[in-house]
Length: 389
Image (cartoon, rainbow, N blue to C red; front, side, top):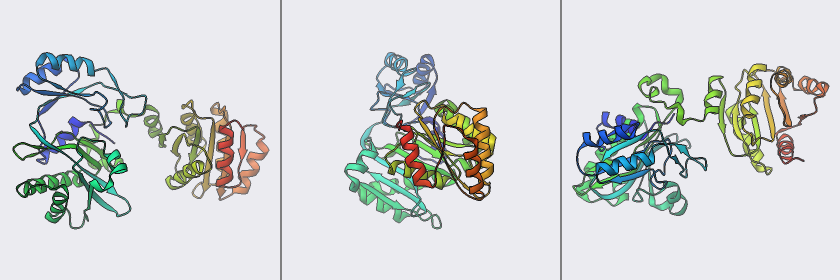
């Protein structure tokens, strides 16, 4: 689950992570009132969407008067903001964050993510603050300092010093930077975050470090421990099909290809997508129907997949362990009666009662259901079908 910048900063403040003062606004009038409440003579009007790169897309503007706050809030609210993370369709801006101006001397980058290979959080820092960190990683990976933190010992001063020295900070700045990084690590661990990103982390002319931006994502499986964070969920920012699938216990993520995937088990689903790519196709989605798939879940899976008009074929790849393959085969036949499956369906069933399942599908004699002998055969047939071959 992701949250907005203003929500991330609310969490930061609980842990004494320095941030500029600001208020969220849902209308132009509220934006102006918030600027008055903040006082000062410079404000920043920031679009609030679940995506990075807002500044480059025109969603972050500086205002030097209340009239400018009004004008900019009017321009940004209701705009469709397109960034490198939204995709070409962009996202509708429904709220803005009015924030006090900052006395910026330098811009840095600081983030924390889970490194699954090392099985521990990794803190990343760079002097390339304000830049797209993905581009920095691709073109100048040496500019990103990475420090892994073993959760058993937690964040220590030596972790902070390694980051500070890598950033080339002045001696008198190191102590305050370590304090900032330690507080951010505490935010990450105590809230079951999957990712925290501050871009930019600014150093003011007085030498203080302030989170000028804030982006957070959380482990959905741990939200039961954090009802106050779950209450921050903004469903309008989520893909409606993904949200609908979640309501039926299906794990669905929309992608940009044309081969729909229906698989049981996340690992097999990833392997299926990789194989589709390997044989020259593009998966349209990730869809895990779980270990207890039945006719109803399979039917809902077809319905969800077919909501994407780009889907030209569907590859059903099920390994029968907990659930028998013959039950899945019957479920597929039942599902075709419940849902108008108008594209070719390639079915590969393996495991318990796979032979019986093959007979069921063969005897059904449904034209657009094609059986496959193994994963590679199924992927090849699904890609060919999507191409109209």
